[in-house]
Amino acid sequence: MTGRAVTAAALLLCAGCLSSSTPAPKTWIVAPANVTPPTNPTPGAFSVTRQGALTVTAPFDSTAFVVRRADGSVARDPYNVFASPPSTLLRAAVRARLEADGRFGRVVPQSSSASADVQVEVLVRDLSLDCSNADRRAARAAVSIDVLRAGRGARVVILSGDGDGTGDAEKGDYSAAFSQAFDAALVNALRALKEQPPPQPLEPTPKGEQK
Image (cartoon, rainbow, N blue to C red; front, side, top):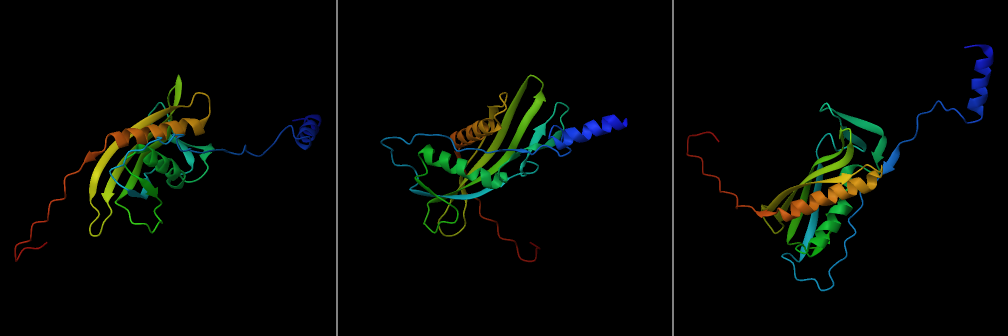
């Protein structure tokens, strides 16, 4: 590069036209569904529900987006990130959907000291941006929901269901896309809830045999 070119580049840097720093990442949220409560709600199956653990499986448990590519690989996008770790960010959306479902009555947070009939635990199995199709970008989510009896003694699973959902990300509004995908996954999992058989008692070990 000639001396004149170096001088010109230095002037552009001072003027703010060029920058040696990387662009700041854009931050996105997953918002609760905007659901209008029923005017005359009918009594639900449970009067009080405690919102239990929300677990996000790897590699979807980080703030950086997980991007699915056409060759089957995944990558992290450092320039598009969630505003908080997904295990924290998604809790408000879960609570809103449980309250709108109609079966769970009053939904209280995990830290509440209120007595509850059941506890709901959520496992997030997918939370990714699907770019494997060159013609369409979509947010993807998949969840499993377990409803546990919350009385004294062992907390057994009484209801369980799986669901997935997608959200249109073509406009680049990733907050809207992931909010749509995650809420659809919750709705589908709640619709799929099935009664689980009671656990079978363990057979006693005969004397003289190792457990």
